[in-house]
Length: 193
Image 1 (cartoon, rainbow, N blue to C red):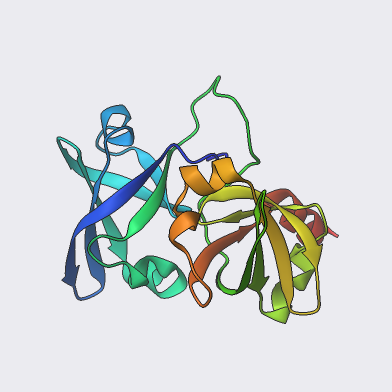
Image 2: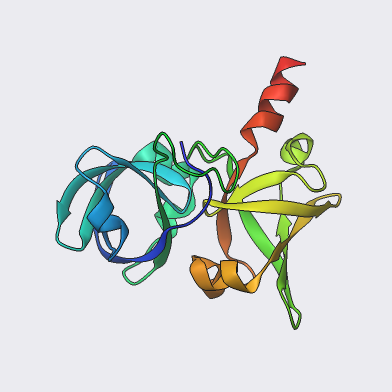
C-alpha cells in the first residue's frame, strides 16, 4: 500500500524486453538506498517488486498484463518515473490510500499554466465516471491528487509548483498517457451499494 506522496523521480536506464516479460532498470539515488530485494515500489503508480539492486540501480520485472494495462509499455531509455516505496507501519499518511493497481490509462487533453499552478484536463472513458467526484481523490502517475471538477468526459486537477517540481508531471505534455487509480474508498462504496 502507498500514499501517493512521491519520494523521488527516477530515470529508466535499461529495458530488457522478452516475450511476455520486460525487465526495467531504474536509476535512483534515494529510493535505491531504502529498498531491498522483494520490496514493493510504486513506479508511476504501478506496484512492482524489486527483483535486484546494484548500487543506484533498481531492477523490476513487468509481466504482459501489467504492460497491457499501464503506461509502462510506453517507457523508453531516459524516461522519468515517479517512485514511492511501500508504506510502513507508523509512516505518515500524507495523501490517500493507493494500492498500486492501475484502473486505466488516461490521456492529457489540455494543460493550462497560470502564474501559480497548472490545470490539467484529463479525458476518461465514460465507464469510469461513477468513480470521479468533485473534490475527490485520484492517483495519477502514483501521485495523490484532488479532482477539481468532473465534466462529461474529462476532469481537471490542479498541480501546485511543489508537486510539479517533485514529480514527473513537469515532463508531461498534451496527448501523454497517465496511469490512473481511482479512489479505493469510493470504489468500495460503489461496489458495496
